[in-house]
Length: 221
Length: 353
Image 1 (cartoon, rainbow over the protein chains, first blue to last red):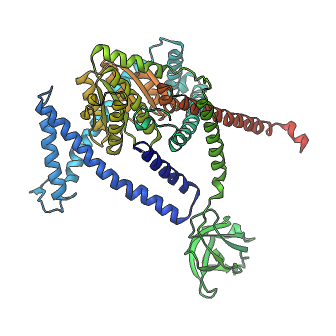
Image 2: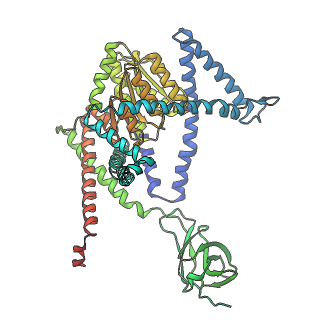
Image 3: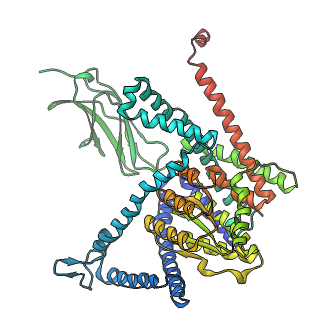
């Protein structure tokens, strides 16, 4: 029963997921929209509570056991509590019962999000440039025939897209474009083709109950 | 005063294969189409009072009008030059309705049934004990070694399922692999760290890991805090996982699932800590980053085959075999269609026309 019931539910909801693809009738489409837009959101809300509970438990445990860098866990917990109070009682843009403005200084959730989270996210994203440079260095070391091929084609493309490429040869930009349009697209389509069919097969295997690893490493039947 | 001819043969019909609420109106162009500004579409419920419901440019012969199901409508089209209009004949009455089957998708359903039949056929043979050969996938063969290495070093294993939602197939495939990895971690008594960005994925992963420990006969070894939620923000998650890599120094990093721009941030940080890295995603744009920064990469469909490959369950291997056979048939059809497509461009074929 412990495994049969989830498999039964999965089969039912899997079929319910396929039906809207072929049935355009509003009864089916509205049910599907309800499942995706309402039911799933309710489920996500409960899952979020569990998630936040897990986050707090991990950090409380870290503080309790005085694990490495446990002091930072206080930062998380205090920030969590303050943000929760502001969010719950101050409203999104300060329309709640809790005042979220002192003079011209506003600290509602929207302001905090745009002035703290967005710049911090952008900072992490900016690091990508440096990681790209180090990854490029690693990729361009011609240690194997594939890496050499990668190095040569990358070199051609880098030169080809610059005005310098046009100066070297009139054919270089069009050759660069050919590399991008033909071998590159062919390889990408090959992968995407396999991915599309693999997705279909995986979905079928799960709906039909053949693939059961998601039940906890049990593999097949 | 210039006389213009109206459009002719106005025909209104219920738009096929839709959820209702739309009528398609078609007509023959006015002979003076080249001089027109366009066509105005008029609608009436009683064939007496008409209201303008749309305008479309010249040279166009079709318009889709939003309607109410179960009501009869009459249409007429006006050819328009400046303020001058010439009306067509009225169409026959039409009523929109919702359909139960989209006939355009029947071919896809047939293909899915054939594909499913291949899977079931090979699964059936696998169940009967038939030996099935699956090609070796280096990234999956390395999983055992990677877990063994972590055990020998006494260091944890980091399993990162990416930032996908539960409905992403890559995330589902990743969780299937997580089940197998968790089982091996339980057998070897190796610490597993499994941080999450999506609350639903977190709750599912937690149950999977717990069940894996139970199946391995070590339910007591399951640490509920080994699977945890961090944040639902992409780069905050990347920063947190980077922190785990640097602080905890896992011996093995699994980066398997649905990734976006954070893929390279995670993979490069992991590489700098000296961990063995096994990555896998179906996101073509992220694959080069993983190939560059990780030791092994599961490319596209290899990710979906992974759980079968690791568990070595004959039935799952049979399903993989069926999947490959289905692909072979589709590849054969594509090649045949490409050859026919190429041949039709050859002048010699004109001889047979």
